[in-house]
Image (cartoon, rainbow, N blue to C red; front, side, top):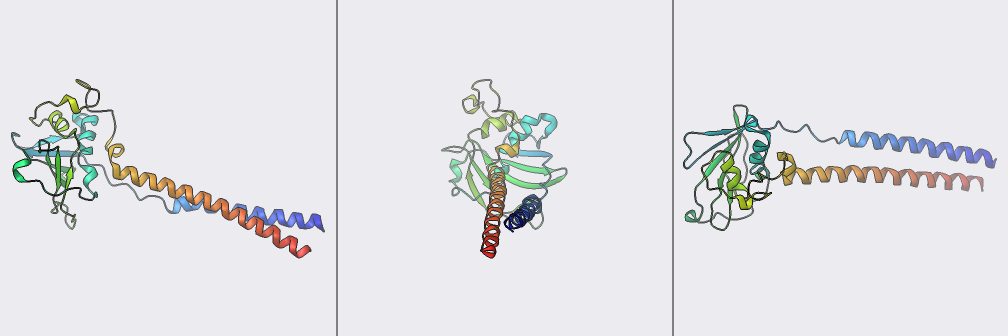
Length: 221
């Protein structure tokens, strides 16, 4: 009788374990992240001392293009960080339009020479129909002026803000997603959610197994 009870306990725990493992395998798939948006294909720059429109795309170098994108794309969903500075403290304005083929996606205004450090503005009015964002001002990256300069904007060289020192180039060979803090946080939260799902499923297996053993033992007693 005891041997039969042990077999039933093992069978019950095994069935529960299999069900839990199936749940572990299915849950992350069911909550898979949505398909990422298409990557921009070019960036248009207009502003002071630029004749016409300056266009930067991957044919100018993937490293340069990704670095230029990284200067602005993090602001797409970010919360504004500061108020609008006085107009006479902003310096020259350069308007960047992020393009997807021939369709403009987002517009940003950059002020690399603003007093107190670079500033960036995200206008509430955006080119995508039906898309509205909160008008906001941000502290720009210290690399803003040098990134714009190597993209073709006539600005004075600032090798002191470029990783690697004089002649070191613009940082490391990273893509825009790796430099985007919003994307980094989303990826981290996604990984943590999957980890919690796995740990939760393991605890469920253990709890059901112990409950099954206790129930069968009580029946025999």
